[in-house]
Length: 223
Image (cartoon, rainbow, N blue to C red; front, side, top):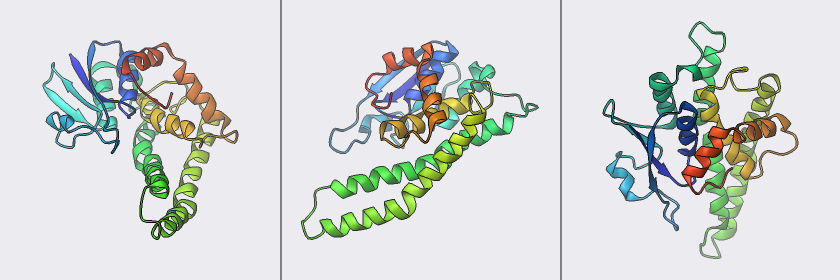
């Protein structure tokens, strides 16, 4: 039995979607963010030393595994080879690329944006606030926003020619890419200039397995 250690409003929601698509039995252990810090609770460290979600435990193999990409690769290797192109397939390296692109290229500037946006509105002494806001705005304008826009334009171009990230086949790359694109849409970053991203997000959100996972996962602000 697979147990998913699931934090509300987190990247672990995409693992629930994958588990639903795989059609295997699984349990969800729920965790709630601290309402002040928005961080995961200490209890997650009892499962994995980093105390982050997602984490899975697999009773069949005794393994405990963190990191979305590693979890997706593990679940597909063990329970769902249909969600991975064969190594002889032309799409195989696209699959590997997008699995890494999600966390390696797209998520870092998105996390930076979240941090600097919070910095702009964080409580602080009145004489520091103008300086902090100016620094945050400068970093957002000169580095963070251009990097996000560049990545989104690249994704838009790819999805103009492909139904999924690996052509016409739903793969692990799509589960991995789902979270940053949902989060981007929820934060107002996916405008009319990205019609293919909009269509892609609506397409996977309409899948029965996605909807079933959403019902089971609880609070999730990005759907």
